[in-house]
Length: 50
Image (cartoon, rainbow, N blue to C red; front, side, top):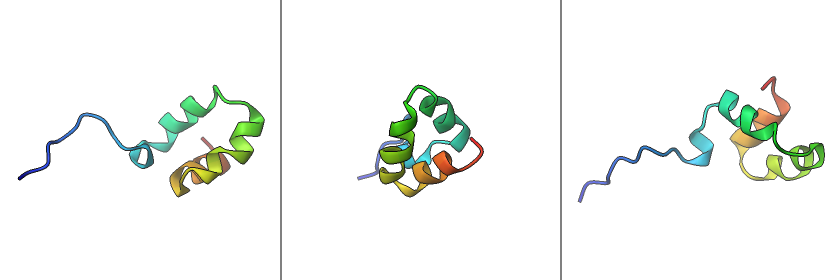
């Protein structure tokens, strides 16, 4: 059976600039303590220029 294509992306497939915009709604504490623990791409986004 073929897997259906979804119009939604997994959290680790979102572009860093999109994640950066989403993360602007979070507190500094959440950005530094919670977000880096979710996955590698989120951690890179928080520490990067986004």
